[in-house]
Amino acid sequence: MAGVSGLNHVTLAVSDLDRSLAFYRDLIGLAVRARWPDGAYLEAGTLWLCLSVGPVTAREDYTHVAFSAAPEDFGTLCERVRAAAPIWRENRSEGASLYMLDPDGHRLELHVDSLRSRLDHYRARPGSDVEVFDAPDGDGRQE
Image (cartoon, rainbow, N blue to C red):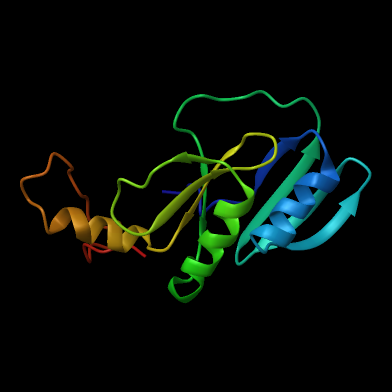
């Protein structure tokens, strides 16, 4: 069956492009790939992030964007972020995470582990109420 093959890009509305570029480029380390008067494209691994100047609507739910962080860089990155950005939630899940707000209040997460490690965590706890499904290729693991 044909379907979605992955996440293509994420677009975030921002009120001040220079301020947002400083946050995403200088604080958390995304690479700027293109810029125009009311937007920019940034890259982190396979993630393509678009910043688009326009009205920003605050959210109060759990919706957020999670960025992968290398385990060896996580501590230093967290120290830098904690000194510059508000924290919106303490980590209560498997794996190392830091939950922060960007300058426009977008909820973000820095996370070390993968979907595979999350699923393995639940597989190791058969009494939990989380049902884990095998990957489409049937090996029981997902990358």
